[in-house]
Length: 381
Image (cartoon, rainbow, N blue to C red; front, side):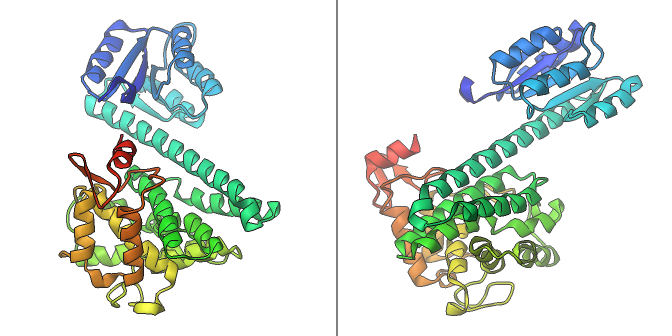
């Protein structure tokens, strides 16, 4: 891992033994860069000059306490997670600090495993907030860019933004960062497949915004099932299947066409062309067109990327599974026209590149799928 990719942990404690012990423990982690400070003034200077990811500070310190430092840090960077270290006697103070915005607190003496767990949670929290901000910014920019072309009034665009953001906030407690990256890609993939199919511009724009909400119903599924690393039992899979109907219930009722499409996608993206899908077992043209598009791009991205229950696969392997089938996937699951359009876009027409993990596999100087090698190498850098 390069130095630029490492997460920066700031440790603040006036006790040299405690500070050194934490510094040595965290420095053993290859993905951490640790900065140690003896007091608040030095710590604030480090926060101003460095892109700190997590602050770990003692509560009881001379001159400026850990709680006062917490308030000063959040005045500078309000979303920077601060973890407080405290003795048993300071527990009430620590709980009060949580109410003031502390991310977590650790009781002294603490176990290294809990220290790592708390920091990991803080980093995941930061990643989720950044992803949410980036995606909301992407949505806002694209709405502004397409306003003239789609002849959307200013009021209409504002209503869309508010309505989408309101519903996206329902996933604020969702902790699966990998899944959040997945939903971002699904919006982009759905857009380019719809464009390849020659769909009207209003449909293309709608599916770009609507498709990322396809799995919103999973917030109603217990983590013990949703994040289970092994095979699901029949009963557990039946619970997973309810996310389609949960998603429909969450999104239904809006008068905005984008959210009406999102409702349809949430309910129908696991329906299969041959009628073997769920929740209703729809077949062929009975499946809404937007559901057929999201069905295949969702399957492609799920194959490509690592999950708690499976490894990641290359672009070439994913295409093989979709076109030739395996124990989970069959070609008959997909609308043939949508399948052709997906393969064309993902293999032959990467003229503009992919903003997320590009579906390109490189073998030597050859780009698998007929992509231009120079372009594919540029995208994969």
